[in-house]
Length: 413
Image (cartoon, rainbow, N blue to C red; front, side, top):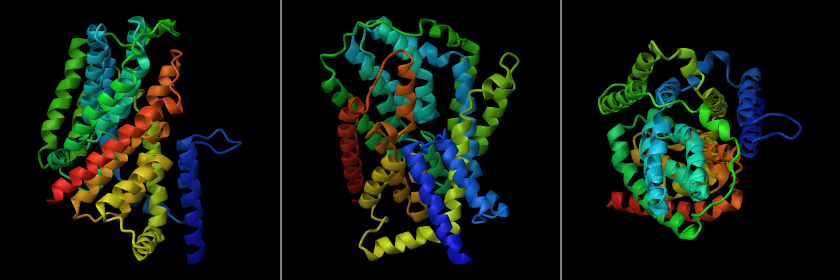
């Protein structure tokens, strides 16, 4: 019976991760979340993960932190803060090079504080609309938005979902994480800007109609008080992150305070929660727990070590993380790889965080942030194809990883 469970767990894992990688199952209307959820259900139905083990499978602090940040970001979005910022930066529309630099800088900073997926979702529509009406080619700016959101999010524990998971499971300190991960992220951001500028130096002019002209009316107007509430919550939350208080508790406190509003209905705030992402996390937690109960990750590690490959080698870990992140996306890749890391060796966790995030820039499917930007741009008739992104994303990713490997060398001296 044990052998049957072992092989059943392997099959469920392979099918689930393949489905997450391809994003669909032929003949079925299932997306990545649906596929992962079916995998989790299969793990429970086949008793690979007993029902009384579910609570041990799910990392509740990570989900609490992610959920809280979504509520805080929803406050800023409904308060019109994101719209206000995006419109304000357009005063540089006559200087596209400086405008690109400012867009990438703001995207990186906000992504480091409030998660890159959320920032891309908030900024893309208003940025596209404003750029087209200023007769500026939106493509380099959209690429800059997606790429800088990935690079900026690598700098902090709360910059993206995989970093939150790494920070919570690895019990990493907020300040030490920034000290280690921020320098390669900042250098990569600067070089990324110049790479985009090089490829689009003569292609900033744009003269094309725009679809969905009425979409502007759907953006929340700027409300100073509601925006200030969100910004104060972010500021105080960051202060508490430097203290010995569990991050998820600090974030939940401010999320709860923001829900107590006289003007903004809690239902309206909750409607902006990305429930699909939370369900994806829960499903993947259960799948990974299922193969862990069967000791499959340990078998893989032992086989790799016998073949001369060791994931404890930081350079090899960075390479494997990059490869796997572009096969199945960085969140599923991270959930698998953290099983192989040494709890006391924090550098391994930092390298996984940085490399899995940098890897998101390689190709379109490497990061959810990329897909969010490009799918929203389609609503305005702006199409960014695989190769359009890859010719920018590949060199930026290669340079970012080289910077990361150089940083590993510096930090080991």
